Length: 125
Image (cartoon, rainbow, N blue to C red; front, side):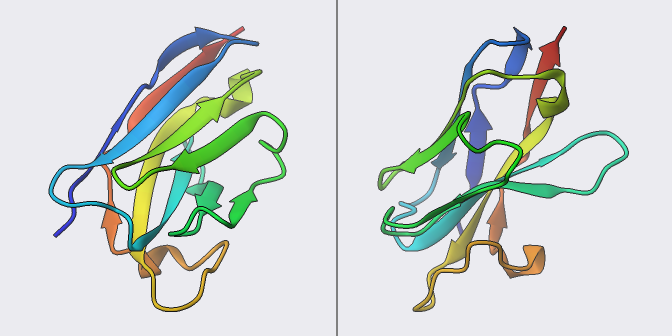
């Protein structure tokens, strides 16, 4: 069992930055492909960025390319968010998918084995 805990969310003005972290409380995440997703009120959960277990491959949603950076080590995953806009306001979730021999940049949400509880990011104008 892997228990994921997000941190780093909060309230920030447009143009500002935040750094989210996702930690695994019970074991390392070195064997897992990881992802950040977000869900705004009234909208579906959407991919923000994903990263392979090795860190060698990443994916970014078009809406965050050039502004967000996903990274990881054996214990944590990070999302550096710069140039934030009100459209980035959402609950941000981290998710882990056990590596099964191939990396998928946007797997089905049901294929993720573990989810965090989410952290709220609010960007004000």
